[in-house]
Length: 296
Image 1: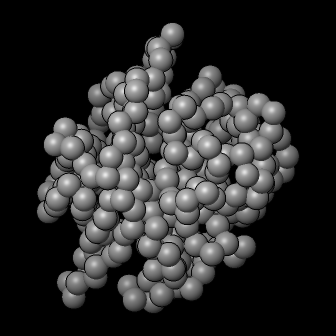
Image 2 (image 1 turned 90 degrees about the vertical axis):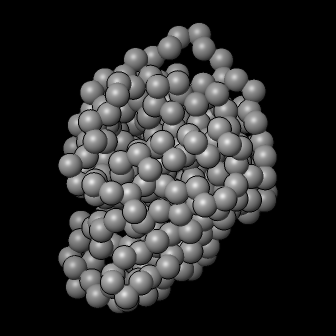
């Protein structure tokens, strides 16, 4: 697939950054360079984004494992040997259906580095492989630095709590978050991206509605472009100190204002909260110097 589709082009043209997007887009390739392969094999955490083939709902998910659980097994292929937690909404169908479009994001809070690889999934006996269609690195903007992590052995995920809207505790958790992950889709693919800011940058407007300001980034507008083409989206909030994950699915749209700001509004269809879903425990963050001082 090409770097951009009509949705991304529409947002680039609206903001007036098509030429800059074309320049940035030249860094996107299909192959996995040696430096990218080495980076992947050092990571204990991988984010996923996909639509469930059974329901059509889009979810963001997270996998954790001993570094090396993600590795390059071909010039355009990665293999993943880790399982999602039992209640993960992507597990039943998306990760076992050949050809499922999937976005992956490897992120290292220790170095504030990240890379994205989008492609097609193929189940394997120990997990799954992804044949890459788009591979690129992102800048460290809005990524909080966390110096270290530890692994909690022998832990079991708690019982998942499902619901059609947010509880008061979940709303408080979201409004205290400094990071979340956003899965989106388009006709020929899927993607998962990172969003970060100072705590409070995500607003809970009601038990079924969230909003956040879209901060200036690399001008590619892959995520907002996907939302123009298809409003389905999935959000994942991670408690870095307990391993609890909150996954939301629903629809999102972007509001543009005359002063150049952009606000994304998300409507919740379903939520899944799983205590201790991940075994990783991270240190307190050092907030990115790029974060706007105010979340408003």
